[in-house]
Structures are given as structure tokens and as C-alpha cells.
Image 1: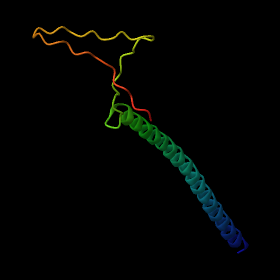
Image 2: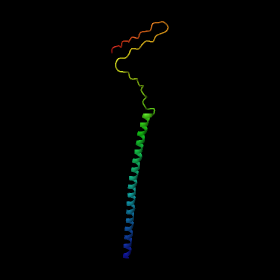
Image 3: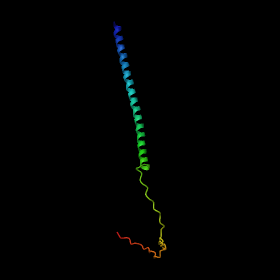
Image 4: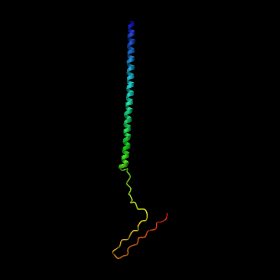
Length: 106
């Protein structure tokens, strides 16, 4: 009957070893899954941020958020400006003289 106790102890040891190995494999699998999920979330988050930046840039450069173009003025030559010449009228009335209007002081 001494062999029955050894067999029982050996069976219990094998069962403990099997359970330990199963728990260890489960834990390792969970760690790998968490690492994979974090990597995927980081990539998706990065793509999302780049997409948002791109859409904001496109909106403000080409969309309704773009500033209206300012009218451009023609450059005037430096120095003295020639006085405008009056055009002759055919009705016999004297041509109006063009006199500069005084600019009020601030």
C-alpha cells in the first residue's frame, strides 16, 4: 500500500505543474495581447492626429476658412507726380481747373 501514496502524490504534483504552466501561458498571452493592442492604438491615434491636422490645414488654406484676397494697389512711381491735364470740351464751356483739395490736419 505504500505505492498508492506515491502515485497520489505524483498525480497531485503533475496536476499542480500543469495548472502552473497553464496560468503562466495565459499570463504571457495577456501581456503579448496588451502590447499588441497598445501598438495598434498608438498607430491609429497617430494617423488620426495627422488626418485632423491635414483637414484643418486644407480648411484654412482652401475652404471657407481661407482669408479673402485683398485688392492689390498699383504702385506709384516715386518722385513728382505729373498734374492731370484737363480734357477739352466741345460745348464751348471753359474746362474746369483741377486744384488739389487741402487735407485736414489730424
